[in-house]
Length: 202
Image 1 (tube, helix red, strand yellow):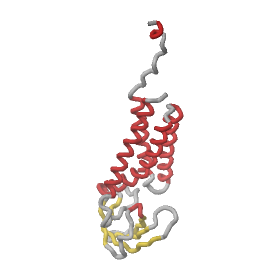
Image 2: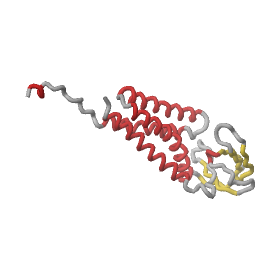
Image 3: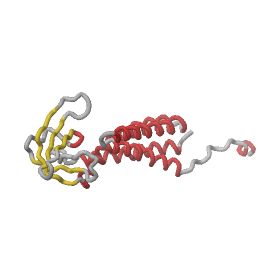
Image 4: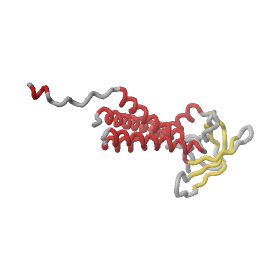
């Protein structure tokens, strides 16, 4: 009986809410980074900085402090992928649901064969008011499906911060839903890996 009495105590139980809080915060930061990266100018840099900060914190906590390298690798990969899918998916959802419809005409479609980033670029002119000219890329749904002098319905940002979005082409109807579904799955994987690392830390 004395052997059992003198046996070392097991590891103390970990508070449930702490790893749960990290499991929510880290994927939210990756998602925020992807969303901010959709904005032009300095907010792109801010979005990248937020995503990299989330990556650094997640990897340090899971791999360095909690000693769960497997979980650290999984949530790092899932988190970066979450940033790439959540940003465009949320942009498309926002512009589709909240964007202001504006009639416009495509005046130019060109493939610049860029080595980096989007290749297709479209010049679109609004048909009413001041005939505002917009230059959009593949990120705003420009593709080879559009032709010069084609009439389209642009979706413009009510806040005037995001670039307008061209409508979906013949084969792009499900792209927004697919991106959001993938982002939701990656959000759960990232959060689950963070929660596991926090609860099972050594």
